[in-house]
Length: 244
Ligand SMILES: [Cu+2]
Image 1: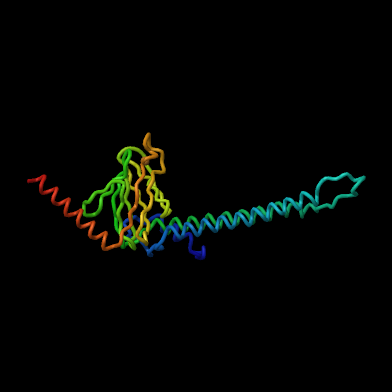
Image 2: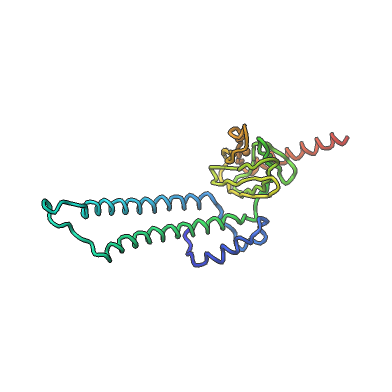
């Protein structure tokens, strides 16, 4: 994710105009959002550790070297010129600020990248309700608190809420987004391997908020297809029975 910041502004502006539909996406977004966020997180930790240690060492050194002492016993203390005093205050502050702005620009760029969704994706609608996650697949199949997806394909959730604000959080994929009544929000992630991942609500939404948990079940693609078609057939059968 090392990109020169020179193209940051135009792309950031373009990003605000992109729609989740993806047709307007100028370029394909990176394949794995989780990796980008992890990279940025590690970079932040590294930077603040280096800066923190350097600043602490500098402070301790200055405290000892320029401490107040009694002239009778220890003689005159060393003096810093006025220019040096100002320099020591301002230059480190600028170093710190520069790194701050650099990281802020990188996270902004990353955020813009991940607001555009790959065009080749599985799109599932989500309606959250006190207290469950209700998913609807393109073929009409519905699941509750269980999002089954095929491995190797980006998944997009178009989300809304029936009642209050919830927040759909999948820690393993580093994605979290509010779902709100009267609004459509979205998130996407890229499951690579079959497995199970926790889904939890990250916005306090009433008494059973803490139990508003579900899971993402990533299946081998052929198994997913079988499940998907079986559920669709079951749905069609239920429909005809109802009509008959
Ligand atoms: Cu909730």
